[in-house]
Length: 214
Image 1: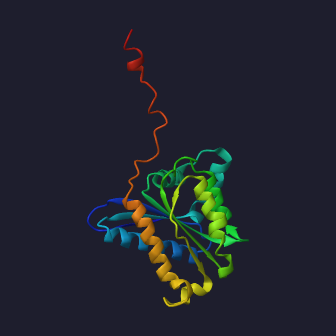
Image 2 (image 1 turned 180 degrees about the vertical axis):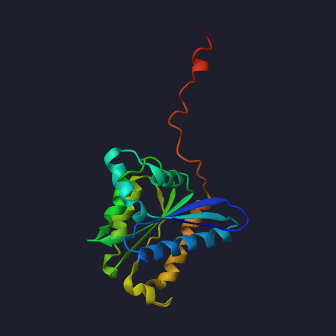
Image 3 (image 1 turned 45 degrees about the horizontal axis):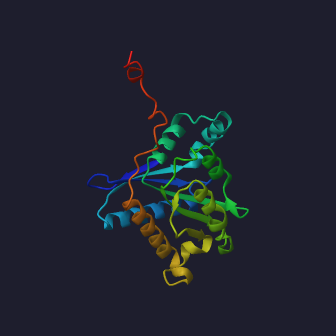
């Protein structure tokens, strides 16, 4: 987990989630680039941002434990609290057999199903060949749509060859796609602040109120 704060205070909080399994990984690289693009665009809108990057591989055992017990603990519990309080989220995953990683799916399985409602989310994925790029749309996007997140229209797929491609290549080049996606996330984040998940006990009357008439 790494954190980066832009100078001059913090207006928004971003959490960047990388589901890459290796270290270093192209998935982490893509996640970082997407987060940096969103921060630049927020800056252009006059907003600063605090960025936390979460490598899911560092929490893999805790994720499995949470699936078995139903209760996230330790560092994972803190990660989830900060994820739920984020104003925007970047999610990047490698693609295996045409879908997102099992590690990402396990992580999503331990999330509160209502906690990401309305939260702006930017999706990215990495794979060996461009033919896998549609997995973002038929696999990853429906997952976060189910969670009722506000998913950015532009998602970014990076094949192995994309890292060496230039701006003039087909599709505008990876840097241009990253910039466009970052701008879309920043615009969504700028319009919304996150007060965190609702308190499940907020409507529970206290004993003083209950005994007030006695």
